[in-house]
Image 1 (cartoon, helix red, strand yellow):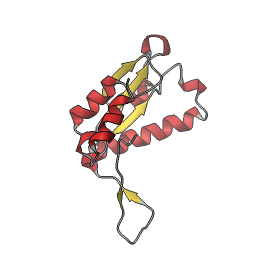
Image 2 (cartoon, rainbow, N blue to C red):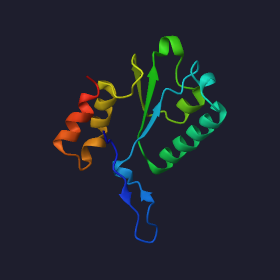
Image 3 (cartoon, rainbow, N blue to C red):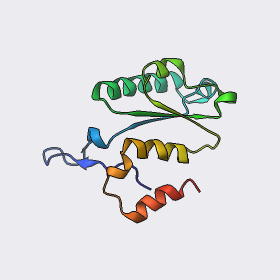
Image 4 (cartoon, rainbow, N blue to C red):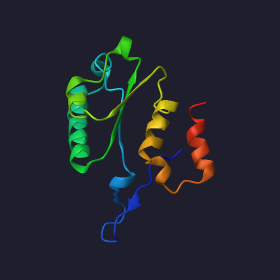
Amino acid sequence: KVLVRIAPMPNSMPGLARLRREETILLLVDVQEKLAPAIFENARVEKNCVLLLRAASQLEIPVIITEQNPQRLGSTLPPLLELAPDSSVISKMRFSSCVESTLAALEKLKRAWSLDLTPQQRASIRGCCG
């Protein structure tokens, strides 16, 4: 189930790939107040999330943030939310980010659907929410 296609780099760097801004989003999944302490090397994860969010801002890449049951697990870590003021924050009750609201946000951004996906691949992506 593919959401992102990675275009190959020029022949000078075989094996590496280049992202294209118009086909890219940053999906930040469940980095929440009560979940963060249970994440292995959580300080490192938070630091890397900050780096990714700053890069997304500089490159004008949209950000989607998911939160698992935020009433019980808290919201996304405040330093991360501060770096993504214009992002879509999606609350969900399943331990999956492939929920209708995430797919609707992707569709609104025209990211996943701008890729060269076959109708079967698109149906498969939609089917994961079933």
